[in-house]
Image 1 (cartoon, rainbow, N blue to C red):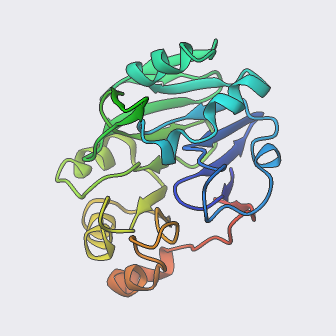
Image 2: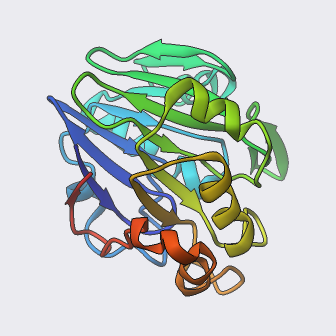
Length: 232
């Protein structure tokens, strides 16, 4: 499994013929470096954790270019279908969907979900975390935007994720202390990838405090270079 971080919570995940973009906020992302079209080249699936603009991002452009399958909650899928997405694969909390060669399971997340269009709020379902599983590949858990919650223990029991993408930016998600507690109390990740920081001035700018809070397990944290792929 090869993973590339594009800043914020946007990731490209490649394995066994699948090219998955998770929360592809590229255009308008202050932390993104490069060309959006190159970042999502060959995209087969777009997986969305919730409906905020800094997570849906370039999804309409991606599906228009590649007819990528959209994997998200029901409301987001229907909303994007109204914008031209023809290949949708909806689910919701607790469900698992077959994406052809891998599955996506939807977990709880403590956040909100929606957008504003023409000065009107658009409800886009519940926020989610996502677990990607493929035979012979590490199990990846992208927490989405969330606070810590006790049922993370059940997520670990059900899926035993090896790789965790963890929001650490504070204000809108967990901060360093809560994120570190989530990783050390509820999970046994082999690799922890911090996300949702360094994008906007009002959130945490670096992973330094998170690394300090991780203590003896800081060696499990991998801080990727934006735009440079790595093996999970």
